[in-house]
Image (cartoon, rainbow, N blue to C red; front, side, top):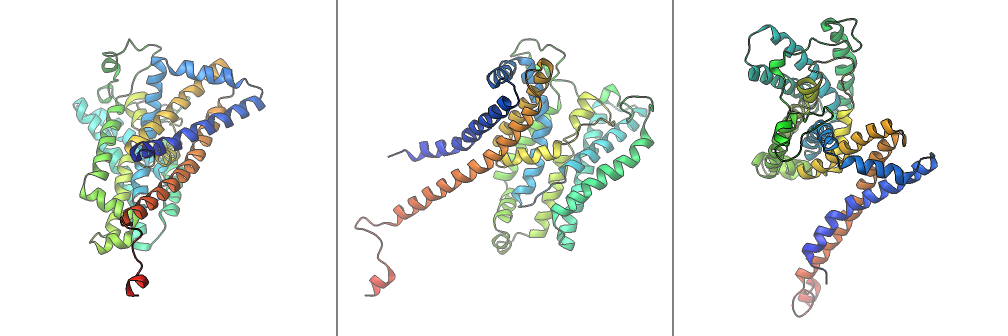
Length: 383
């Protein structure tokens, strides 16, 4: 008979393994149908992936995706679907860039300048997400509808209207805010990484926001799994009526969950503001909020799971650039792999979850059996 621990580990690994196999098979079929050699393409992706510079690039791309995933996962834990991470991080990044540029005129120490930028982003993200939470608890408006609408208000309304007013160089290719003073830039982590590796080349710099993501990962794991608030959050998400009977205020938890989700969402754009462009411009990276939803779903809302999911998506994104340079296949194959991996993972996780539930029922049934046979029924006892 299979060891229960071995079986549990096997079930935990089965879903991502099945999803990976399915994604590779589907991608190989698409490559062959499009006229590309699937073996050569996968060989290019793998050979590129073992280079140090690619790993640094993967971490840089995974960092904002992970933060977006945590922001979405906080809502998911409360059974809330925060689709507004996209608008929250874009509005927060814009506000942080404007504040950072204004602070250039003051003789602030570098760490205070940086802290002010980060605090602004977190505050704006919290306020924008809190609006959806407030609408839900006071007017019963579904958070899916409100966050979608607020996405358009943030990106197509506020940012689009205010960006032309803060543009410093109308002739620049990507017009944007004033560049933040160098004293506020986050230093890269190359020196730390090179202690255990060789020198990082090709101009790659490991973003300092990676450390912020590590802190967020630890805080999320401890907060959700080791605190009273985390227990209230999980219990309210699983069964709000039982949680209310236990003294948990559901409206309060809904509002706080959305606010916390917005706080983390505000950090998603910080790699661009503090490490890369040091400004908000018309070419500011978008789509990370929706990518975060995929990361949260793929990572099953756990810090460890989302870490692996973000690294996977970051690796595939970095591979896309390599495929474009070498012209061995269309870069869109990466998007296909990401989409099929996510779809397959959702199906595989549900399949494995049903097996796990069946095992639990079987163990519960075995535990209720007496040494002399099944437990007598009520009718048998009364007879």
